[in-house]
Length: 217
Image (cartoon, rainbow, N blue to C red; front, top):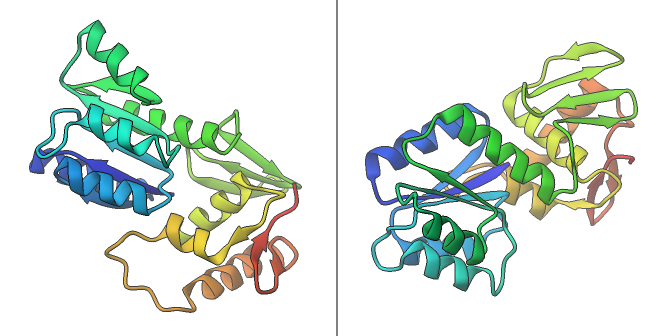
């Protein structure tokens, strides 16, 4: 899953990005409103973490502009904690609102919930046949037995499971699993798909030639 963090306090921006990468996310960063809007409009992020008090364009205006073209889940993360601020942020199009200071586990949990809901998944555990994907523990079990996956392999399985029964294109996989700094080879998706099939069975991922991939609902 790929997240955009828009925050002008550089130490906090770097800390947030690092914590999310350690949790297995691909992360892009922006330190001002206009650059944040440019990235948010140009990429299909799974979620956006948005500060309100930003240079060049504040978070409220960014949200108003973004909602004209994108429905990406947005979590406002700000020191502005009055009722009127929260109402204004939610009315501007935010999906959640968290005030500073905050705890990283809560931020991560809120992001997981936003990503699940955006994909139509109500619970933290996704079932696909005899496979269970625990999105909190980032763990996969098949027939009750744990399966060891690399972080990128897990991300691929989670993405396909979230959209089970739906075609997931190669472009979607690139957009959701790799950040803007990633210099991956052109065949990297094929490599990860092949590795997942070795571990979960060749029939787990169905190839739609010329289109993309799918797992059964």
